[in-house]
Length: 154
Ligand SMILES: O=c1[nH]c(NC[C@H](O)[C@H](O)[C@H](O)CO)c([N+](=O)[O-])c(=O)[nH]1
Image (cartoon, rainbow, N blue to C red):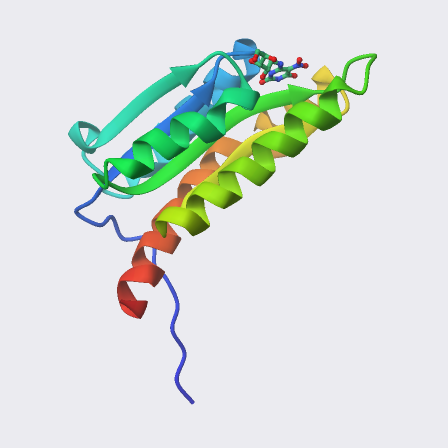
C-alpha cells in the first residue's frame, strides 16, 4: 500500500495572500490568522506577500496575475461575502469561487479558499477567530499541505 500525503513543514517557496478589502473588519482577522499560521510553521515573513483588492469579486483576476508570475508556491485567497438583502451575494460569492478554482487549475498552483460566504455578520465573526475558528488559519494550513503534497507528485 503506498500513501502520499502532505505535511505542514514550511517549504522554501513564497506565499501570496490575495485579500478582498470589503468587510475588512472581519477580513483582517483572516489575514492575521493566515500569516500567523505560515510563520509558526516556519515560513519566513520575507516569503509572504499580501495583495489587497477591492472585494471578493476581484480576487480571481488578482490571483491570475499573481499565478502568471510563477513566483509563488501557493496563493491564499481571503475575503468575506456576507449575505445582504439582495441576490448580490450569490453572484459575488459564486464568481469568486469559480474564478479562484479556475486559476488554480489553469496554472497548477494551489489556491487556498479562505473566502467566507456567510448569511450574517455573526457567522462571519464566528469564523474569523472566535467560536467557529479562523478561516484564514484553515486556508494557510491547506496551502502548506498542498505545497508539500504537490511536491511529491511532481
Ligand atoms: O468581498 C465582498 N465584496 C462585496 N461586494 C463588492 C464586490 O466584491 C466588488 O468589489 C464590487 O462589486 C466592485 O466590483 C460584497 N457585497 O457586496 O456584499 C461582500 O459581501 N463581500
